[in-house]
Image: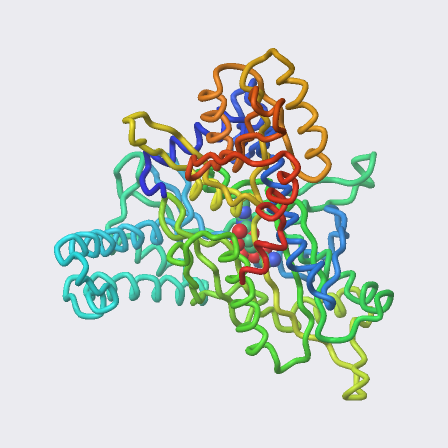
Length: 513
Ligand code: GAP
């Protein structure tokens, strides 16, 4: 697992070199915080989206999917609170003229304290070896306790100041912590100001009549405004969910960390409509269900943690993030928010239309509460991609770069390689490709020596390679090579489809949890 800046740079370079992610409009020197997915990236992204959709929609008989438009009536964003409250606190450094998110400056400071704790733990683990009890060490070591208390108290104060919109105190905190501008090194800061993150655009041909629109900053509102359409046409009974995936846009101030924070990105969201009063129970339920979805991919549990929010978004009465250990530390991957009846009630008010649910069991109408699960598809891509990126030194001293992607998500499931480009081996290999490609992403590759072809497939994350050799023509067997163990076994061609299907079928993965 990657854990430092150099490795992160290598991951970004690898994503470009192997056709996963390119800077947007690169021939014009790119556009900051906007990226394009290449031929392998789009396959990985589609597979993640499908894995999410299967688990959330196909496997839940009380969740249905929709696909709402990106453009929405502008009053949507007034009702949702985004016009008034979708702001980031910004601060400028007067010397470098660079603009920062004030909360992120403080969070980065805290991340440095957390890195010190990690260092203490690593040192102690080395010292005590097998005897090391991490939980006990963290609970009793005075240095670690002091670091943790400091980090907690800074985050608490930041949360409280943001909650109260006390921007002067956020600036005071930055000054007290002596945070300097990473660019100029100076502490010459402006006041902290709020900045709205929505992109505006216009609908209509003439300047006089054009209507001001926003590009949606979250997909969720397309679900809220369709709540009654879906409930009535689908004859849905509470509790039920509406899911969708799609693009969202935010004028993010901090454009770094690759596809972690983008200006155009994709979300996978589900709004679960529930009777008021049951939100605590459903919050627990969805926290557990969503974490299990992540764990089903086989990435070890220590890479995930829950983080309960101190500062709540304008619509929430409780919120929890699933954080992932990215190469630059633990950061938010998914949010599980208890949104109360904030959105539906406000749409009722602004649209002047009833958005109530008639509960046949209670024989009354009410505005449902909502539990939301919201994950960034691009951020999930970065999580699996960065975790999969591995540089190995082999027994013979050679090195290889391998993407140990979960087979269910890998862009290509199997590569079929004729050992040589003659003697009927390409024809036999192509027959195998023609048989397999109906059920899984399959490629044919005959270029270069077979060892180099294996390395290339390793770097692309292809979990299986099949080599067709002269023996294949005689007894209809091939070698099947496993990406991670590099073990090869001789198997009959007839067995291949069932053997591979068992390894790449989402069912086998989703059933693990
Ligand atoms: N509907 C709720 C909502 O949008 P959020 O916490 O602002 O909540 C949800 O966003 C998820 O969307 C985040 O956990 C993250 O994975 C993803 N996300 C948010 N902003 C993003 C950005 N600028 N670039 C990439 N992903 C982003």
